[in-house]
Image (cartoon, rainbow, N blue to C red; front, side, top):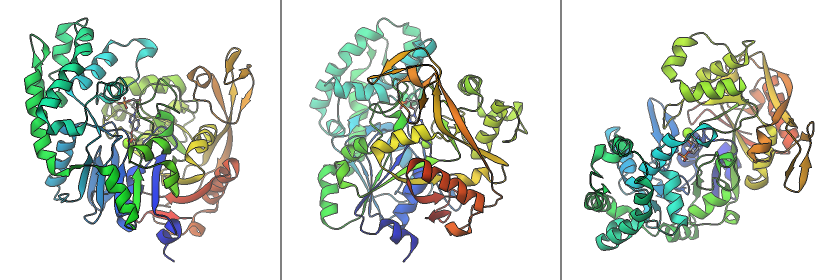
Length: 499
Ligand code: IMO
Ligand code: MG
């Protein structure tokens, strides 16, 4: 039996979700499954904040909102109802695909019920972040995600469908802008105007000196988008169900990661959709019980976080967090040209891991904060996303003498009541709680294991992996009771081992 057949035996609906803070290699796994197994790929959450990198030979593509099955002409790609949909960003993505010679016509569908991102959402996102001080800053991607989902729950949102009905769109737009205008009046008009010149706001096209927003310009532009995308907009919830009934293989593509989930993550340092299997299934028009294989993606032996918020295993701790929020990749390359992963200074280790793993934001270019694999966090995510895992990027640590795994935390904060339990300084936690007032006081307990010799990227059989790498994988398995199904040993489709 082929590897992929062993993995997907008896599976009709599978999902790829991240069990960490995103950027774990979901794009590669989705593209691989699409090339070998899936007939349909559905995105259910997030929007242009995601950056999913796919590499097929010389072709490198970063998908943001378009599903990662798009490189496979036989696969139907669906943007589901739960997605925050920015038509400008999506049109830009489609243009990029066209320029690369990738044909998507006829294999992309967009939910009529996806949540529409409007110019005011980008403005609110950017202004809020610019005005935030100290711990108030989230470090968002500036793509309007939070304000768009907020409007959905505030019952003033618009949907993709509204781009096809001018009068309805204009009425809902005016209603939507009401409270934004009250708030924006309080901000410095110069700052608002500057934000509105951003290329993502079509270089000032929507700005009006009198009313901040030029309603007519927004209506006209969004009607144009409606016409451009018109043939792809449909009831995708029905489409997905019909395709399952027709015996097609459906793959759900998660975005972000469990610890960024609005419901499960390290709130408020999260995104504004539920990135767990539950949010993903719902946003794709299904339920989590419809999914027979959930691959929880786990980057190892290191993991990353972009933006603000606690990160117990961060290499270099607060110094790293600060550095990443204030420096560019170029500055880092100039300041640390020769950083080594086994440097005695943890901060430098973190820089070296970032360089070795290419850990710079696919959406924003920001340096990603780096830290060791955190099992308390993984145990927490597995409560929701289940026990089947795909480990990714292991080859980045080829030839590193030692690897560390965080197996538990020591709570080192003041007495604190959390979830019906009083925490005291010195308490051991095996499973993370996403409460940031706990997490920021958690110090990792590590076990150290010997590293392995590379190269491992092109090994095809688990039994051929270096013994120390097998021991490392086994250590994760036995410490979490996970079933490790897949190892991704590089960005290419064929650099994948089914365990
Ligand atoms: P993929 O799908 C990593 C982070 C941002 C910020 C927080 C809120 O590539 O794994 P938002 O713009 O969503 O309001 O920002 O969430 N974030 C991600 N971090 N990977 C992502 O997506 C992310 N999408 C959002 O950095 O901390
Ligand atoms: Mg990413």
